[in-house]
Amino acid sequence: MKFELQERGLPFTVAQDVEWGSAVIEEEVLADYGERRYWALGQIGDRLFALAFVARTEKIHVISLRKANSREVNAMPKLKPGTVLPTPAEDAKIKKQMRQDSQNPEGTKKDFAKARPANEVLPGIVGEEADEKLLKPRGRPKAERRKERINIRLSPEVVDYFKASGSGWQTRIDAALRQFIAEHPHWV
Image (cartoon, rainbow, N blue to C red; front, top):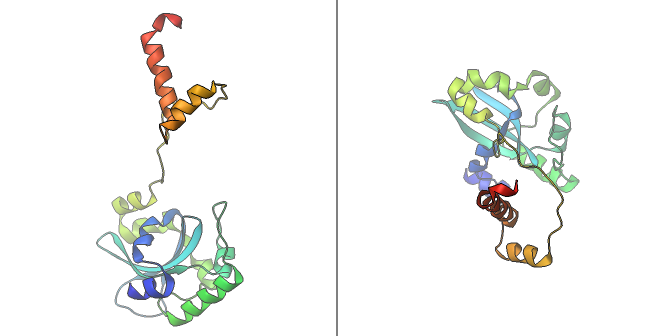
């Protein structure tokens, strides 16, 4: 972990944010490590990362983590919109780091051909229960009754009053209107 933090500015803890739903995984068979090792490409935020890992007791243990280079980014089957591509200078730095780390080499065309979507292979690697947690969609769950986006014109005093209360001011306007409806049911 010290190597990742000093050389790459990446603590292994960021690996918990890998979006496994869009990741690809390949089992590494180049050397006999005494346990199955895997290589994966997955998004963390707006960047693509390469990680080498093993599975122990239904958990992923990261061996090595680095940003993906431009060749790996371009070979990835699906990328989120807005994915940041490495600059030429960043690419050179990533390639230098790869030469220093035999645990996480650059992915080859052969690697990409053998890589499978994480949602297909994770159950066999970490088990069904852990797989469900890793593949769980991120973000806020969709509400049963979603709010409707509208445009409304309000007096400046009303807007200033609610904005002065800080973040979430639109939600407080919604609450005030709901309270008005509850107190004045005959108006509807």
